[in-house]
Image 1 (cartoon, each protein chain N blue to C red):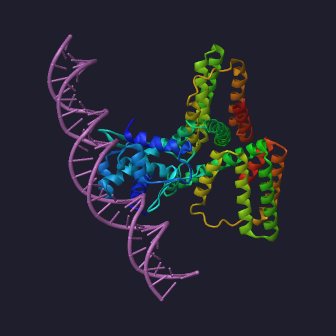
Image 2 (image 1 turned 90 degrees about the vertical axis):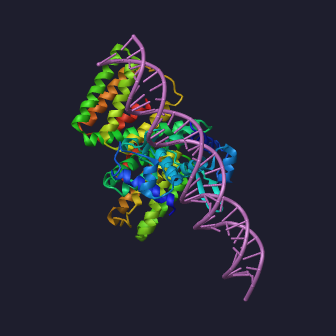
Image 3 (image 1 turned 90 degrees about the horizontal axis):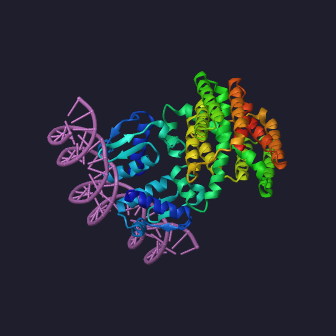
Length: 218
Length: 218
DNA sequence: TACTATTAATAGTCATACTAATGGAGGCTC
DNA sequence: GAGCCTCCATTAGTATGACTATTAATAGTA
């Protein structure tokens, strides 16, 4: 980890943790003193923090720490910082809600688009899901499930939704060791996935959204 | 506009426009020559671009332009760049889809939470909407509509959804001059908003989501 | 051929000097 | 006293040069 990373992390975490509260004013030299790094490094870090909406720079006034509602809450680094703060629980709940929204909309869009190549991929994923459930292979089941969800997102043909999902997935995987699959739920789960594919195949956006919501809530 | 802003914009736009395609390798000195700015400024800009997932820095290899799927597509500055590129149309469509997802989920969450203070705000917004429709005051109608949607988001109590909406709204407002309100649709619109509030009041998340989708699609 | 040592290219870091906005203090006018 | 102007100290912004550390590529060796 470079000096830059250390400095950025130090300041970013301090802000997220409230150690440097919104409204607090500091200077470049202040951060130089705080971190022990050179002015160049501190300036590079502040540029990134400004781009993340966490501080504002003003000549003759210094660096003002901004309020949480200005932050780029969807940026991976901000998410990581919040995950290492007291906000952790709240953020994880927000991420789960967000994932429902993303996957639901992706399912609807997939149903609207209904491209042949994507349908094929989804079919394959369901086949893998089925085989893994029969073989009671938890690892394979998880992998197939991931493939299925990724395929739905790809079928939505919306790069922003895909980006959002990858950010969410990475964030929710943080510190979440192997989640054991509840095998009792597996057969119903496979059936729901099959239903979702059917809804997409018959262009039924509303049903696809509903089914995806059921999958997410289960 | 500072030198830094110029440099960042120059490189960022060049990447988004494909002038600097994914896989292209350059160096700090290369960008210094290209932009005419000092090394300090170029380094600050590259740090931000790295944080946006648009380039990767490697010792002895230089700065590699990354592929679109690595970009932080939800960052306001990336959105602005794409809005100034050939991607503009596609991005706007993606943003509209995303907004549907966000507002739908917000409505569902608002129905689940059903907080008194938020219900009051929503009631006020509907009152304003009603009065504006009766007075045929387009400006007031638009303002009340904005207030209503912002209130639904606030009622969802999800900071990430709120952030997302503000990013989307700003992006879709870019270069979109005063959209004339279709007055014929107004009465039905007000009724839908009233229905949405009713669904939230009776804790009916599914209905709230549906109605919001109808509003968004109309 | 496979493995190792060397080298050169390049980002990373630091220090220093200078430039240019700008918020605010103090004074001036009415 | 209120409002406006002038000046100044403060602070971010910009530029330059020197040095460090990493590492991909190359040459050398068994």
